[in-house]
Image (cartoon, rainbow, N blue to C red; front, side, top):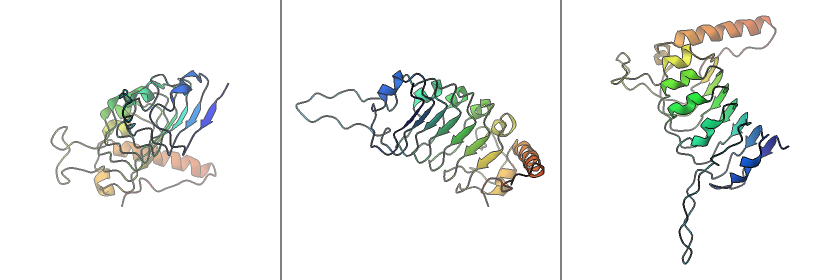
Length: 221
């Protein structure tokens, strides 16, 4: 049975991946550099208009552990992804995502999430339910503090990265390079000190174990 499928850079459009529903043993799907998030143009007369196909099949192979969907013109995260409870690595970089839905919490096996080069302004509180998340990359997004000189408040001045991300996940690798925010502001986030302590403990362990540790933290100035 097929366990890995690479269809990067093939100009695939919405509906093109429907046949993968039958690949019940598929563990890795690379489908970056396509047009899955674009609307399919309507047929020319005399053909009748057809319903807009979904970007991804409603029944994705639940066996998937690695899913790469970078550069696909997505403005929202396709909902079938949240049924993939065995998913460990998800790449949604280089899309047009402004938000991450609270249903991200369903991906309980996820340990690596790449959201680089989108237009994300904040993450939901539910990101803290990802109990295995160790690596999160948010380079070149729009994450910022609304009122830099005020204390955080749930409605007036919400913290764009919730405390649950730092305190309730095992996160040790966070990349925020290219966001309109400073490291000084990040240091004031609730829960951030827990992330720093966990990362330092990991780096210390790696150094004594003979491995090279990356001592840079988040890529912010």
